[in-house]
Length: 232
Image (cartoon, rainbow, N blue to C red; front, side, top):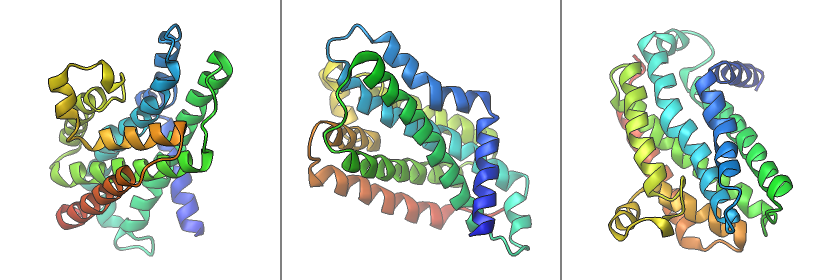
C-alpha cells in the first residue's frame, strides 16, 4: 500500500506539471460552462462536460503516458524490482481519477455557485457513474496505448479518437442539437453511454441499461488491452 500511495502521488505530480493536461482536465470544461452561461438549459451541459473531463484524461492523455513509459523502458526496469509494472498502471489510474475529480469539483462548483444550477438528485449515483465512466475511458486509453508503437503515435491516436467522440457523443454540446445523421453515428460511441449515465444520475434515478453497457465496455476494453499490451 505504501508503494502504491507513493507511486500514485508521483504520477499525480507529473500530470499536474503538464500544462496541457492541467488546463484541459481542470479548467477548460468550467470555461466552456462560463461561455454558455446565458443558456436557459445550462444544467443539461454539466453532465456532458463531466464526461469530457474523463475523455480528455483517459482517452487523450493516458495513452501517451503509458506508451512513453514503455518506449523509455520504464516498465521493463520496474519488472526487475519489487514494484511491478502493474502497480504503476494502477497508480496512473488513481492519479487520473484524482485529477478528474478535481476538474469535476471545479465544474460543479461553477455551475452550482455561479449559475444556480440545482445539485444532482442522487449524488451517490452520480459519483458511482463518474467512477464507472472513468474506468471505461481508461480501458479505452489502455487499448490505444497497446496499439501505438510509440508515444507520439499514442498521443495522436488519443486526439483522433477523443475529439470526434466528445462532439458526437454529446459531451461538448447536447446531442439534441446535432443533425440526425450525426446523432445516429453517436449512438455507437462508448462516450455516448457515459454521457447518458451521467445525465440520468444528475437528474434522477439512472436506468440499468447504460450502466450495463458502460460496464461491458470496461470488461471488453480491459480484455483487449491485456491481450495486446506489451511491457517493452
